[in-house]
Length: 101
Image (cartoon, rainbow, N blue to C red; front, side):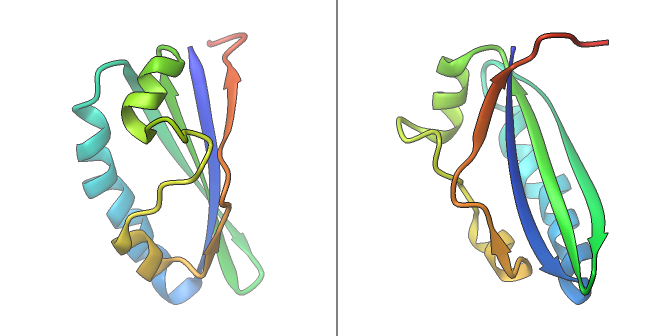
């Protein structure tokens, strides 16, 4: 299994908007993808901002490509997410899940 990890930051005033976007629009899109195995959105207050870490799980890199295309290491941030976030990582990290409990 592959874990895809990405971070974005939002002002406190729009952090709830990003969380809502993730649990509705992003989740709806992900659920329909072959090879998608789950997601977690972590939220942490970081000074005046809220840091989000998204971890999505896929069966393999082919499934990741089905979501992100051939340039799968580039972040995909939809317009609604861009409106809520102040900044985000341009690159996404991928790792094999070594242990899942």
